[in-house]
Figure 1 (cartoon, chains in turn brown, blue):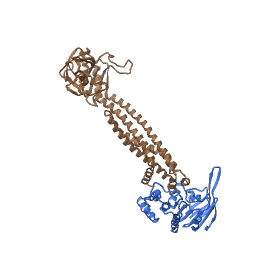
Figure 2 (cartoon, chains in turn purple, red):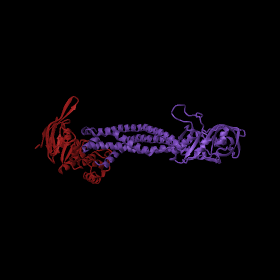
Figure 3 (tube, one colour):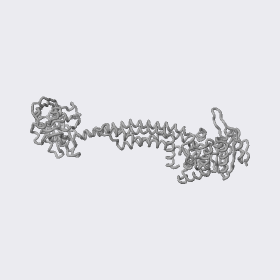
Figure 4 (cartoon, one colour):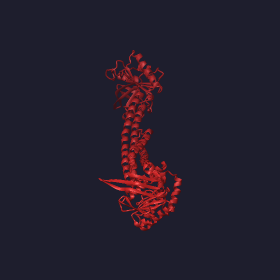
Length: 401
Length: 225
């Protein structure tokens, strides 16, 4: 018996019983589609987090005051360190060739008022380089000018939301606002960008770092954002930062440097594990489909007993019968998997329409794996019915009508 | 060519052991026309199944063309069935979802013959039995006589030496029954050995040799040489 003939014969047998064939294909399709869709969701979550981190800035390192080591003591919170990070520390970092840009950050909270309107918002003291490092963009005007960061100019840039609340539809450019007990001239408005890892950039005022330090009467920095020269330069930049700060802090390692990559890869591992476990749960639905195939194939064997007897009388070997029924299960699973792919594609498309911000894409490996697993379940669960068919006694099989 | 020696077949029905065949000795030569007759339950079908290698005897030796078939494996027996034996059944046993042509093609598919050759042989077989225009019909669109002709075409498509027919007219009206018998007799005239199980004495009379079974034993045999 030729393989092509066997496939044709099995296909004819399947199309001979359309209802049961369609039901089995449906079960298989749902199984395959759920594996692919759930994997796509997991993968989407991974990409979402990754893109959130990249929007923070590329090749980013964050320098925090205080050490995060596991050698006892409380975790490093603000004010836990004997020595503050200062603006001079920050400026000294720019000497390293591995570091492209650096933005010191001071954070505080102060009332901002214009005419009679008054809002309490976060004040971000920084330099012109923050614009590039955080990938900000302007709606109006310009960002804090470059120049000597130690000079506190009385200018500010406000977030879009704050601008709307204070000024409505008027242009704030050139207006003077009061922040705390000082007056600043508005020189720009940030574009609507939404959230960026917790800090709502719509609801802040950015001022030159020296002005912020004067405003809050402190010389300490909240943190320093450093942009390395490239992916390869990240570790070099980290070393440079640590050694520079150590020199300046009398030989003590009292800062923590977080690289974006380290953060990312941690999240990456967690999310990959999550994706795999979700896909595993979905695979259970595939095996349910497999059991369904087994049941229906067993019924098919008893329905077609006399046909099996006839085939044996016509000279079919046990292996032929086994092959025919296995081919049936395999064809069912493959067609089911095909429809599952289409279903998954449609679901993917629907989800992408419903949540445009969430990047849902089914990875190719998930599609391949789902189809392969579907075929395997079909074959494994097809073995039992096929063996039962092959072992039928031809005389008894033929005597039944 | 068919030689049965001391064949016994025992079935276990509940606590009882039923001797479907006991000590059957029986020889058929190439080209003979044998009718196996007897009351129901006398072991006619069991004998036919053993000759057709669908069933194995519990005792005795069955040689087919000097080949001891009781020593063959299941697969070897399947191959003998495929090439040397053609079955015609009372209930036709056509595959309902396949057309006449596809039903006739089945044995050649199992034997692994090329699709191109298959089509011409099917056409030839169907025309010689006068059902060529029914090639694309499914069994439920055919009359009983036509179905049995399709079944005969299928039984003879591999050009076997032996045709085994189990009540081939049992499910047919008289006219189509006679037609079917004539077809089988034509095949016998061309040299195929025909062994037919029937309980109809009129059909039995047409055969050149009649074997009568009673309670699993041969009671009369008109032509045992």
